[in-house]
Length: 119
Length: 112
Image (tube, rainbow over all chains, first blue to last red):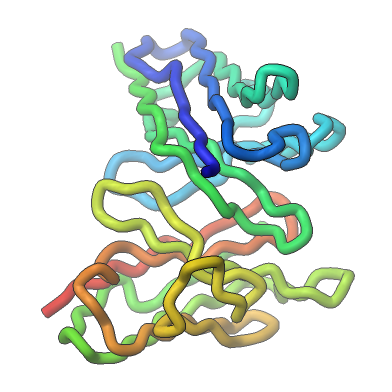
């Protein structure tokens, strides 16, 4: 059974940093691209970042480019999102989601981890 | 960036009824390889989104045939027939043709 479990969320002050993790199980992690997608309270879905299976290709939304870094450790079956210079508008539930490369969709999502940026 | 516009914002349907949700993209979603990467997701209350349909009309594993997708180019539709109580939630379309990946703003389905 595919499982994705995010962690690392919490309350952080504006301008500070936070690192999210997503532990994957139930599939060969190193064969799949992965993504971070966020959802602000009461709002829709916003794609944040993507990383290919071997980390060769990385993409970011303009809203986080230069502030967030996506990475992965295939030996640990873990996806990361390093977030710096956090802003109030980064407050959201952050999901990790597996990417189907051939048909280009998100096929499994974790339950999410909440990030609240506030003083 | 590809802007995805969903209509309606919300709709209410009786059990057993049928509904359609529209999703339009600001650019063609036909990839250079000829495929169209348009997907539909359902977010049930308090849950993570789940994949329903991919590549316009392909149902994901385990998804009921009451859900069907259609369309081409920039105009797409999700149809739900014989609506059941478990169908309530917010439906999102999403495009995987080009980066940045984008979603529609969602359509909330309520049961009368």
